[in-house]
Image 1 (tube, rainbow, N blue to C red):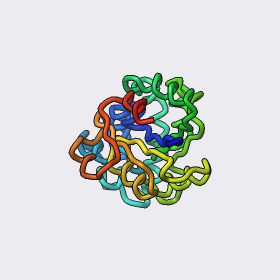
Image 2 (cartoon, rainbow, N blue to C red):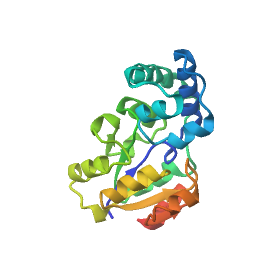
Image 3 (cartoon, rainbow, N blue to C red):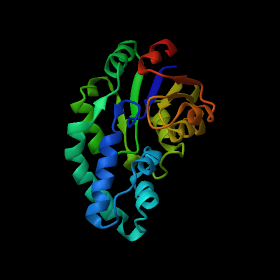
Image 4 (cartoon, rainbow, N blue to C red):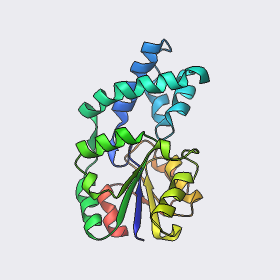
Length: 211
């Protein structure tokens, strides 16, 4: 394998509290109430449109307004609370030096991704960043993984998709890639195992042995 496709939320960075806090603050300000943390966590990894619709019952006519407010609030909240998971930076640096092409595929907007990756000091090791505006059909659809394969001129069997949710694994499998679930994120070992990934790891550093 020569291409690594990484999810962001729950895989590279611990963003759960920042997402939960921002969705709750957005819902409260717009008059939709405060969603439960558990309900929000179950939707992390999906596009914001789906999350707001599912956990706060925001009507389609108000979705864009909710997303705009969320993004404005998130810029401030995320810089204070988002951190890398253990061994992420050293492992990414190691794989990059080994010649592995490293990309990020996220349901986040690209502006937030660039800001966070710069803030977390891992941008120099990332070849390309793909966000929610890059494809029409979001995770768990395979479109983003297929786009990355096309742009990196890589065959599916040469790529590994790594993520903490079933949506990441479904995207990777749909594109014909190898997949790897991480157990420290937003989905449990049992949920990930049910997707029959190629690998399951408990620590990000275990990627070194895969490549």
